[in-house]
Length: 153
Image 1 (cartoon, helix red, strand yellow):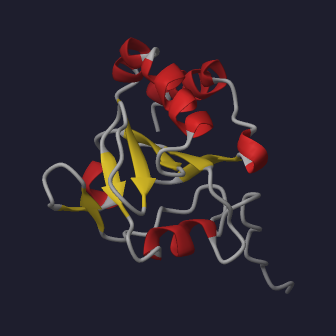
Image 2: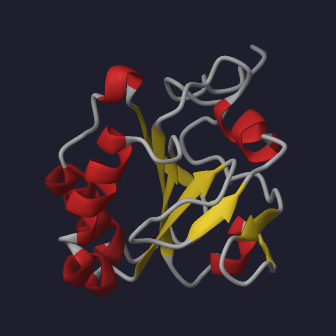
């Protein structure tokens, strides 16, 4: 019998498709409370944006994504921005001061900025590493969220 191989991680991450996001603790920048991906399990899909703080291209992408707020809400999706320090964002900011979330989700070679999209079970669906700030078009992200919203599984 052949040994089953572990699935390869998605490009730019330490996670394979359909793998649950590690339940690493982050700090909600506004409330100071602990936040974990598992809090959304069976509730909402998630777009987790690992970004640079106070970076114009990162801020511009988040602003463009915020323009799709109605669609994001329709798709029952939460958007969270992961940063090492507090910064302004149209979406809630989660602090990863020690880099534990980045290490566990993106791996030792993972680069910021990277967007992770997870379904309502917190299983990774897509990863969008954006080396040089080559972000996917927000419409592409919204299209994925619409598909996830219609998924009956």
